[in-house]
Amino acid sequence: MTCQGKQAEKALEALMHTFTALMQEDKEVKTVQKEEAFYEGGFIEGDIISDGIAVAPAYRYKETMVQKDSGLTFQEAVNKSLDELETLYTSQQRNSDSGIYLAQKELLSSLQTKTHTFQDFKMLIEQSFSELSGTKLEAKISDYKDLLQRVEKHLGLEIEAHFPDKPFILLADDLLPSQIEQLTRTPVAGVILKETSVNSHVAILLRGAGIPSLIADTSLLTEETNIIVDAYSGMVVISPTQADLGKAQNRLEKDARQKALASEKRFDSAQTKKGKRIKVLANVTDVNSARNSKEEGAQGIGLLRTEFLFKEEKPSFAMQVKAYEKIFAHFDDITVRTLDVGGDKALPYIRLPKENNPFLGIRGIRLFQSHPEIMEEQLHAIFTAAKSKPLKVMFPMVSSVAEFQEAKAFAKATAKKYQVDISQIHFGIMVEVPSVLFSLDAFNEVVDFYSIGTNDLGQYLFAIERTHPTLKVDETSSVLFDAIDTIIKKAVKPVSICGELASNKQAIPKLLALGIETLSVSPKSIAQTKEEIRNV
Ligand code: PEP
Ligand code: MG
Image 1 (cartoon, rainbow, N blue to C red):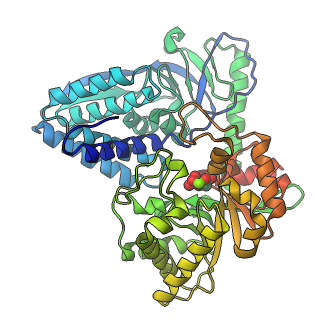
Image 2: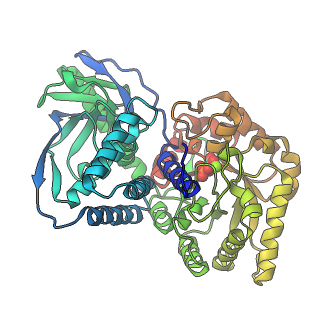
Image 3: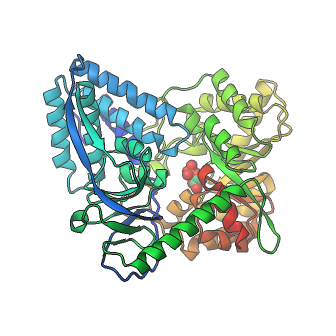
């Protein structure tokens, strides 16, 4: 990107923010491995967006355009859309997909500065379609379409999508991110899209909603016929036999039983068949997700990603204390991570220098050097809210013992400055930079605990950026497990895992075999993770 003119630098910076926010949501894309399956009837194959199984009549997407008089000008319609996206973002904070609305809001704000009439706006959006088409960012076209539709709605032109009131499998070329919310309020059993990608926002939302979904060519499918979407094997059975339907129905019932069983036992401890107890903690981001994780059966918080409390505006000291107090009230076992900004996580008011490789730049613990005042305020707020709770404070992105010691000394100095007693607070590190693996003897002398961040550890071990649109770290690689093995063998302080691998069905038995006793997972994975442990 190049910008020219008086405010070129500012414009470039704003664009970088927009792109960072747009790319952010792609980071937790999981590659679903296909299972073997055999069906007697004809089938087509597709890519898995969200696993599961569905049996229902096919229904092709239908919409009508309705023209109403909204009485709003173009600018008013854009402002209303911005407000709406802000509300969607803040009201869905406990949902990890809420950032999509923030990304769309940033995109709309930047489009607003370039256009003054609806015609210009529409032209700019249509121009973006052709520019993005065929590129790695093609999946973002639906975000542009969504914005156009949102503004049109406020100008009085509304698209009304129609869905059946009995279970159905939706066939569509693509959907808009905003339509998934509407879809979750229908009896939809499965979705087959023709033109999206597994990285698109629509795909992320479908996964979040737990709707079995595939990408496949829907042109061969006939409406109203009963079909099977097997989003475990990536197959759509277009002419299922009675035996096929029976098989799918059995799997459906087995899934439902497993889910209900896991949910029923979510408050029970997780014990392996040999009787070893494993602690299952939650990765939380805010007050709502802390409450939610308690309800899902978490035994504590293994990772509080505090950067999500900070959002677009920096919360005041008082607001931070209040938020931490509310979160800490839910559990006794709590690990708070200090701000992990940088890399793919941007905050508008933390200005970081333009870096060629932000993932290798100012991130995590390095903020103690670049933004000491923000770190001091955060630590002061955490210590104040902790009162006498034996809290664990964890530093992210630590690469050397000196870095840890400086941050810990800074924390102690902060406590002294504000006269807070922190004798009950433990200090530890995320193990996510490979250099730590080679300095564990020295770390053992100074840290109180370790938590392995497999998302970043994988990224840095394989030199594959975690947000990369086409390259993916192979989570099943023995290298990752060997790294974890090394950490467990060398560490003389407690070790837990808080990366995505902790809730990976195939990984859990291996992690337990290596000696891991604490897993920290997203709130919605708690019940299932406990159940996987019980099967080991
Ligand atoms: C990790 O890197 O594995 C981790 C848990 O932290 P985050 O995903 O927030 O970087
Ligand atoms: Mg990390």
